[in-house]
Length: 260
Image 1 (cartoon, rainbow, N blue to C red):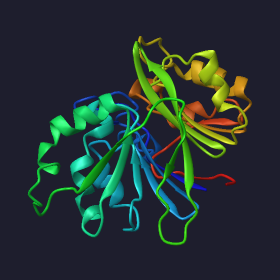
Image 2 (image 1 turned 135 degrees about the horizontal axis):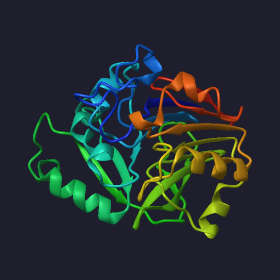
Image 3 (image 1 turned 90 degrees about the vertical axis):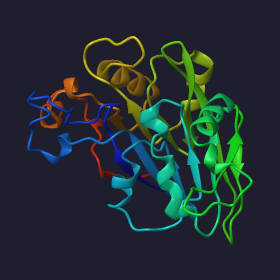
Image 4 (image 1 turned 180 degrees about the horizontal axis):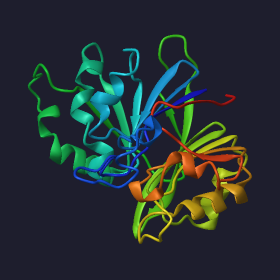
């Protein structure tokens, strides 16, 4: 399994417009962060998780290949703002989007032109699929590929339930503040975890970096990347001095390899 971190920043991205802090002014390319999104390639499938407003720019750095599914964690703009830019990926077939019904309702409201009966050119041809927390679903079998099971896991974004996703021994969680004990058990046995850690100071709807480290350490995950980072998280280079050996800040363009 190959995971590409397309973006690792929070909703404002880094650098923030007009900010002159040391992170926003950093010359280290690892401190330049687009909105959080990843690409998972496994068993012949190519899966996008979240599709924020930087999606077009992110995909210009990748080879142009089909996207088989888009998994959405929740309906905030920094996670769905790039869905219109799926257009080039839907010229020959529809792209399936998977999310909670609540999230799909927002997508349908914001992009009604994608669901009109008239087959309009130059719009993304997408199909919405409602999924539920804790209930695995299987991607449609394509060509000679085996089916692929994905597990949606409920986490809390403040008081808002959203989804993380587990695919085999890999899991992606963003915008989480808390997770209950039952759902925590669904993360056992991971080899790699990409998880949010906004900054060092407490936040009402996001984990801190320290909380992300504590959770990942408790789960005994050997490879951990922290994403959805704000500029107040500090410099990437500085994080290498205090994070445990198995944890590091993710950075845009980083590639992780995980056993399938």
